[in-house]
Image 1 (cartoon, rainbow, N blue to C red):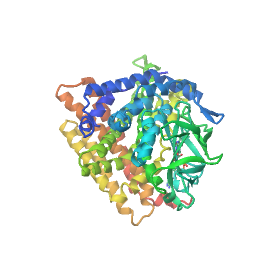
Image 2: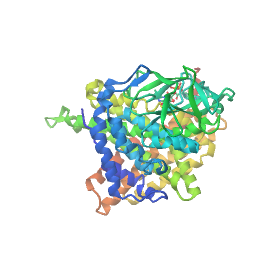
Image 3: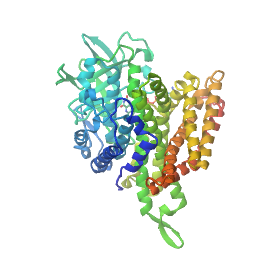
Image 4: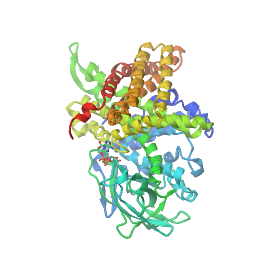
Length: 587
Ligand SMILES: Cc1cc2nc3c(=O)[nH]c(=O)nc-3n(C[C@H](O)[C@H](O)[C@H](O)COP(=O)(O)OP(=O)(O)OC[C@H]3O[C@@H](n4cnc5c(N)ncnc54)[C@H](O)[C@@H]3O)c2cc1C
């Protein structure tokens, strides 16, 4: 089994070159952080994850989890890991200082999260969902709810979960049936939720479930959904926990991957009704849940990067050791063969581009929260809105490809479980499904992020990315710049086509949506990767930085430009072809 090494230099470089962390740190509300401190945080996260988290990944997957006596029994390999994570202060890194958080930017927080996710994807889901609950309550909770729940969630003393899905209501949350009936100052909830990640666990003293449910007189569909706080143990006004609430896990799914993450079926109200507290107003629940989902969607995109990175490291270690085939009469390691190098570098280029795209999005995310001028905050929020489906959709689709290449590089040994390559392939598969499938991300992209503003957000993003082309030319990377420019032109043409088709071809935008997402995702990720190559070229020209590292950054960007960007032609052709052939066949 290969050992995971946190890619510290690569993360620090991308944080600066693409995430522009020093600009983020200069925003109002952040204390200036110097490079040394950033590196110290990354190094500690790396050390913690390499030594404590990564070694649990394979064993915990084998052990899985189960429900016994109405509670979840977790994989023994994970014993002590959450406690150490909490004691290290990792849950509160980006939390609001008003509630005990450390107030660091999300751009940096995401770099740290990538490391933890690579180390053990199943484990990393526990803090991820808690973070989502923090986001939703920070925005929409009452002052009293914030005071009661946020300090304990931010510190990681308590965990949070997100309860949307029901057997008959997945992508379409308008179909939700869980009931919430008013009972004095609270509500009583009854119903069943499925697929609830870390729905129960023994690591925290309490679990705060955020639950979507419907009040008796609610209008049908998504307009009748409300959001409730349902604690596992009821909480008194002074924060002490008391009686067990009427919400229990009744089973854990047997899944393709992420076996160590308990995906629970949750029963609400089997004995009289689970006590819940309304967040905000009745029937506004979906809006509130979106606050949580948007952050979670970005974090799931990051999981795509994290699994890709781990699968890449694993495949590279194997390729350096496995002797097969000969060069000049000598048996060589398979890493010498052009086709294996193509696969390894495709993995590396995709992982690096996904990381660059995600950290660039977090740059806008932090600016949308902290920029001094309201107009600036609005513009950055528009970038986040548009980039979110790209990060979620593109980074999770490419991780399936990367993990599959990882198996391929192992040959037959990739198909058996002992080498571990198969686990990344199995784990990766969920990422394009939960938090909204790629199809749902694509509909969000064309519906809310493109048609709703007549392409204004996309035009602004493409204009941003064109400045990268100009910088690449100045940096002496003209051949790469030409390829990027062509890809951006293909994007602009495809966007125009979808907009113009929308009126007289009703199925046009939806039929084109996935290919448009992959087109914009490929081009945007390529441009973000090029930002790194540009910086590497500038450092080399100035005789600064680590020469070998910088040359490698440029080489990987070249692989992306030559081997991956040409896919934009295919995506673009598929968009332009329209919906006729797709809709012609009777379902
Ligand atoms: C391991 C795991 C963990 C999960 N964790 C959580 C959790 O913590 N909390 C939670 O609430 N949920 C959770 N989920 C649920 C997850 O979010 C849903 O599975 C996901 O949103 C898809 O819903 P579905 O499974 O009902 O698929 P469906 O909605 O039935 O979709 C099936 C297919 O139809 C497509 N489709 C559906 N509607 C449309 C449409 N309108 N247009 C085009 N295509 C469409 C989809 O893209 C998909 O390809 C989890 C699921 C899994 C497997």
